[in-house]
Every structure is written in C-alpha cells, then in structure tokens.
Image (tube, rainbow, N blue to C red; front, top):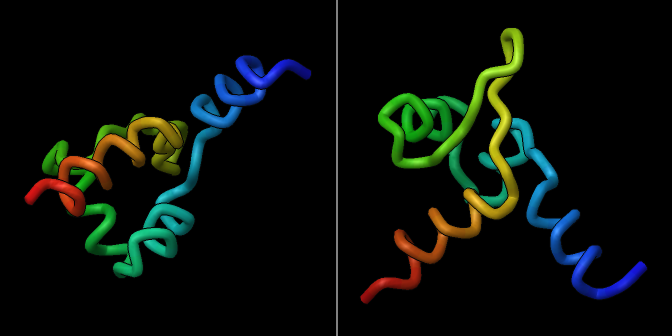
Length: 67
C-alpha cells in the first residue's frame, strides 16, 4: 500500500471515547464532556461516540501544542 493511502486510512480511523480518553489520559466523562461541548469533533453511532483520528490530532495540536 502506498504511503499516501496508509496515511489517509490512518486519518480516517475512528476511535471510541474510551480510546480517546486513554490517549489523552483523561476520564471517559471528561472526554464525553469535551465532545458534548464540541471541543472534540465526533459523531454518534447508535449509543457510541466515534472520533476520527485526524480530528483527535487537531484537538491535541490546538489544545496542547499552542503556546
């Protein structure tokens, strides 16, 4: 698979809120609050929230790397 396709598929990967919380070292409830207040972009699939890898990366860059 080409590097460009691998990069695109990595960015399109969707994470659960549990995975997001673990990556950010925060609780599930805090991750949920950040999704509900639209600080982290997500979509709801049934009862479960999904966050694109690329959207999480944008959140990390804007929150933790500004400064």
